[in-house]
Length: 259
Length: 249
Image (cartoon, rainbow over all chains, first blue to last red; front, side, top):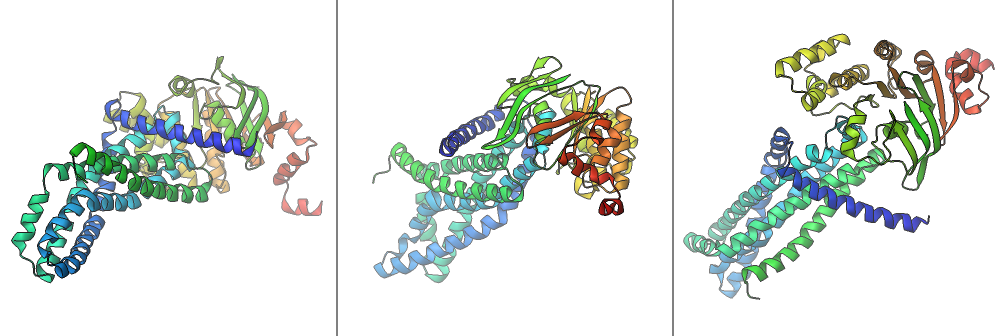
């Protein structure tokens, strides 16, 4: 068989395997057995472990955004819109995407390398020998952990970013605090909140499935493990950015945002 | 009985096994020798249905497992106890939890009963004191002993499968593992050990197979192995010769 034909067959087989893993990982949420202890461990690792880094990055992004807007809007005499623009961009776009990217970098690489080393150390084979489905035991708890923790971290990150924006708007740009907060209250409407709340769930599912798949398909020792980890992070980043655009377009249509 | 009928297997474009055929009764003590990458571990995984052959048939206890689904293989796998290279203990669990893993999955024992059973099993291999340790705190020999006990905890296997059970161990620990392997066969149970350590293989097994480039080039008893004309086997047998003798030849 030609080398190209084998590569094409492998690619199709990989896509098929990824699809099955993603579906089975999700179905595991409603089928026994449940590995609740593993879910709690994953929530601790992915949520509590990512908390401070997301807090820090969100704070500085909020401040930087507010600073940039202050410079531009002050020149045009629209300083009172800082809160509104910071709020909309953080809640709808920057908050979910930034948190997901940081989360993918930390949790995605961790999951891929952990599962990859389990594959190379025959621990996944051992699970199968014991009659335990590796998808139920390893993938479902990670999917659920991500589905719970990423949206929670996004809400915390959004809040911290807005507070960072407030600090710059009030203490550096000398805008009124009440104007800033009233702008934020204005943008916290149903459409914006829904738009910013759906994205983290989709990103979390993508990060978990991609990282688990890359980890479980690790081959070839330390080099293979490095490759799997890198691929998990790169593929997660690409999928977050691409799906963000698609979701934004779809949500614009569903929620009736005018262009 | 394990039967391989013209089994071939490849990882992508790399063929690992080519038309391999043999049959092994459950009570036989078999050593599969061969170099790294010659398909020894792959062979064990095929027996357990962890890998699916490209062609040929694998029959275990009269059942053709070649096309069986994962759920259907569960019953077949309980006939074996496998110890992978370096033990393959779960990193996130301590010794007790590793040994108890099968008990929790397969039995309805209470916590007290599990604790008692785990202590009993670890006591048999002199590791009761290590019950709370994590795998990273164990030596190579301890890892293998825990792995052997874990594989025995929940099942009553017909046959043991060992993947490089003594590789990387010092002579004292290798000796402990060899004695344990022999002890476990006292009830008439057999084993397949894949290894590249001829010394241990000769000590343990009664039948020897030699894999080279994915094919079995030798299948016979100890005497036949020692007199084998194959160059590859002669190279392996040099391990038995003291260094001074080997250099004078």
